[in-house]
Amino acid sequence: MKIVELPIKNLREAPWNANRMNEEMMAHLKESIRRYGLVTNLVARKLADNSYEVLSGNQRLKLLVEMGFKAAPCVVVKLDDAHARLLSQALNHLQGVDDIGLRIELLREVLKAIPEEEVAAILPDTASSLRTITSMNEETIASCLQNFEKARQAKLRHLQFQLTDDQLEIIQEALTRLMPEAKEKGDNPNVRGNALYLLSKFYLENNADE
Image (cartoon, rainbow, N blue to C red; front, top):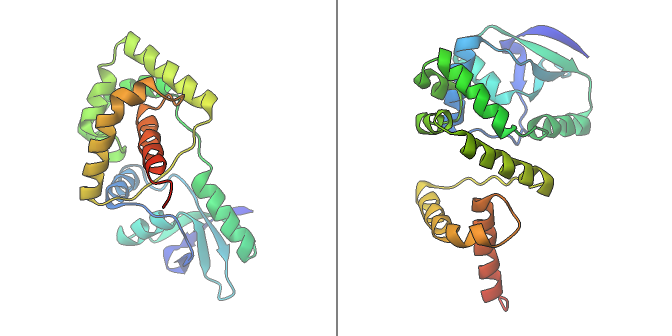
């Protein structure tokens, strides 16, 4: 395994790449590259025609082409098709979870030096959520830390959904109405997750014969 600077014209997106990024997240990624450059290497393997197939970094490659980059640093690996796909999945999905307390302190320090709109342009947080974070008192932070620890101990799993605006509006309304009950029932410290569970459980119990 080695890191080399490869011409963009020699890099190919993996046609089987399953990772997708919506327009909003692509905009955040583009702003990060524009401001700081490409600070994370792509991972690629050499093909028979001397081009390179990107295993990790396909979204970054699209932006590099769009932004006129001529080359990119790549970790070059030698893998067969099956192991290339396996590594791609591992790199896309094996990620840690932020310690909420440390993240709050980190963002507070960042916002002391960098304007809110610049931070919101790079991170997926909205300006409103950033203001909420910086205004948290010690009691609120303690509560967040307690919920984070409960979530860590419960080994919560993550699910991702892609929804239309209309679907999102209906689901958010349903979850909001269930919030009071979700706070009292279930052992999931994530109240919205608990609300989704109660909604699904209600449907299954009332449609058992279908």
